[in-house]
Length: 129
Image 1: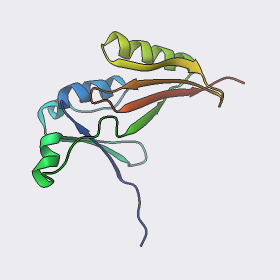
Image 2 (image 1 turned 60 degrees about the vertical axis):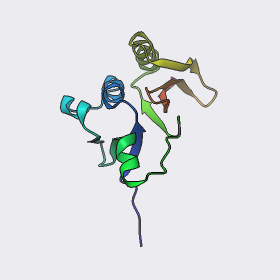
Image 3 (image 1 turned 90 degrees about the vertical axis):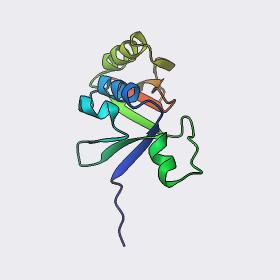
């Protein structure tokens, strides 16, 4: 049997707030999803990113408890300046910056923010040279 990663799922406490965050990162998520208990977006290559409320999870798993920051996503920027601009935009919008942009020893401009549920979101771009 061969398995293929098809969906990455995040459990959220406030669907509208979470989707607003990911829209700022360029994901095309319809506004109608803000009031849905489940939403998903198909990413380039066919991988899906799904969002489910805590209520959805406990509807089939009554023992479910969210693990804050239990997932990490990484978004590539077009340039090192793009990392800085995106980080500044998210902070200006009220989101939590965890690690301000820096030039990482592995050759990337890197920053870390948290989405509204505490999931780690990395921003990165290759450094010139």
